Image 1 (cartoon, helix red, strand yellow):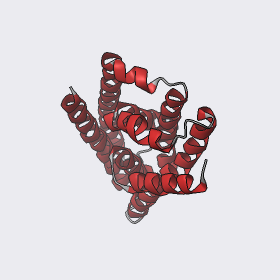
Image 2: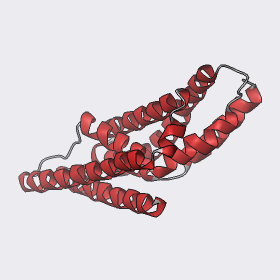
Image 3: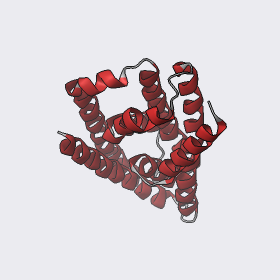
Amino acid sequence: MAYETLLLFFITDLLFCLSPGPATIVCASHAANGGMRNAFGPIMGIHAGNFIWYALSALGLVALVQTAPSLYNIIRWAGVAYLLWMAFSMLRESRADLALNKRGNVKFTRGFMSGLAVHMSNPKALLFYAAFLPQFIDPQINIIFQITILAAITIVTESIGLLFYSSIAAGARSMADSAKISVISHYGSAIVLILVALFMAYLNYSEI
């Protein structure tokens, strides 16, 4: 692949990743709840979602997803449902923690699944991999090799964007680091998940 193509992809993808969206909001809300440690779960979940999409692209299955909208709709709406279920679970736990004046922390697996659910339920992901990504693929060069390179670049750009917003949220959280504030921020994270789920639902509904 030409270096100019890789540089253009890096810059363009970085601009996408630095634009606040559902993924950055979820990561930032986790960081605001329990610091940067809490952000690593959703960040890894989002990376896993990217790997899934890149794998589908490498296998030529993105076109299949486009031709089977009912199957993709099931995946997207399942992601929305999971986000809502997780949010209401966090609300129940937050009320109990607030009564006990405990610090609110989100387990890595829960954060991971929230990040994965957000990325797989976002209809804009299909647009990215079906319309944007092919512009950087040279059909004369090994497709899997090219997609592997672009996936590696996305890990970097996605990490920069997510860590940037998460660090800001974690810094704001550390300025008010008390047990009660931590639990309230845990409560806020659950509300953020509900809002993200509703936004995902709106996007999915508008795609019908």
